[in-house]
Amino acid sequence: MNKLTQHLLARIEAHGPMTVADFMGEALLHPTLGYYTTRDPLGADGDFTTAPEISQMFGELIGLSLAQAWLDQGAPAPFTLAELGPGRGTLMADILRATRAAPGFHAAAQIHLIEASPTLRAKQRATLSAEVTWHDNLDTLPDQPLFLVANEFFDALPIRQYQRGAEGWHERLVAMRDGTLSFALGPELPQPHLTHRLKDTIKDNIVETCPQAAAIADQIGTRIDNTGGVALVIDYGDWRAQGDTLQALQDHAFIDPLTAPGESDLTAHVDFEALAQAAPCAHSHLTPQGVFLERLGITARAQALATQLTGAALDSHIAAHRRLTHPEEMGNLFKVLALFPEGGTPPAGCTT
Ligand code: SAH
Image (tube, rainbow, N blue to C red; front, side):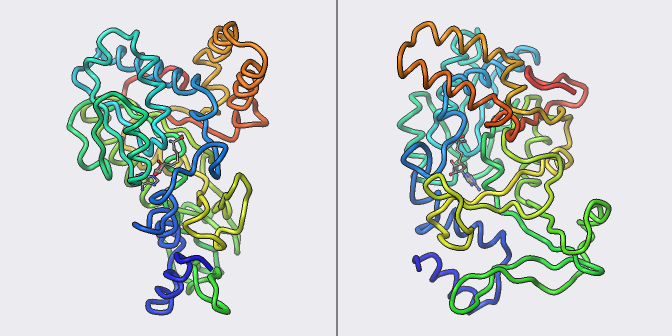
């Protein structure tokens, strides 16, 4: 049993069962034992890999979409170029390289990263040569146009789970049974915020909410409506999540989420409907990642890069293109939602 499990069991003994959100928050961000706080989880040696780590093309195309949106909005200066949960800083580095050719973009951009993990902040500092300001959350971002990207950030935010009962809902909890962590159900209670889920669920179905995701979408949307800008949110999930989507990854394989808190990556599918509804600005259609990247010209970019490659490097470049776009790989599982000003147009790659 690892140290974080011991800590969580002691907490449950003292205070009773905890919500799935409290469990997830501790497992990911406990100051000394949390998953993100203590390690770099990305890449072949880590537990999972992400689109920017698979190919530079991902960040380059996102950079071009953001730069085009910035031009379309009159090239405001200065503006905030922000990323939520930047991991190793690879996506931002690719965005910055691809946008060097956009006149005035770099001179006007102030780079702001929202990152909770000191370990990953250090990685980002090493990757990015540009001047960067770090934040714990969006509260401290400057009051100016906001051009933002978040890849595989919202799936890491703590979710609450509710199982439908006869009249109300039972919250799913993490409790102690036989000396180990175990799921349990709380008492049946009315949950007015889940009224809209009565139509698409039956008894015993599980639904999830992510209060932090909704609060962050509200903040982004409010800023975009007040000062201009756009946000590109890329993650796995769908328009309205259904069922238990909490999952744990260790060494690129799924494990029971309660087995190794702090040593496995915990995520849940993103409910994009909830994000769109929480953001008081306009939003695009939910677009599959493969379609988004094709619209931005990934095939032409892939062909251009391929002319400089041979052998194993060429094979892995072709595999990366397929992995990002093919419907049976990340192309359909991952989705893009764009937020933009009311009355404005969505950024390139997304439609309304
Ligand atoms: N976007 C990167 C990394 C995804 S992993 C990529 O695509 O490769 C999730 C990232 O979000 C990590 O950098 C993690 O430390 C950060 N993170 C998770 N929860 C957070 C929170 N509540 N506040 C700020 N950053 C968070």
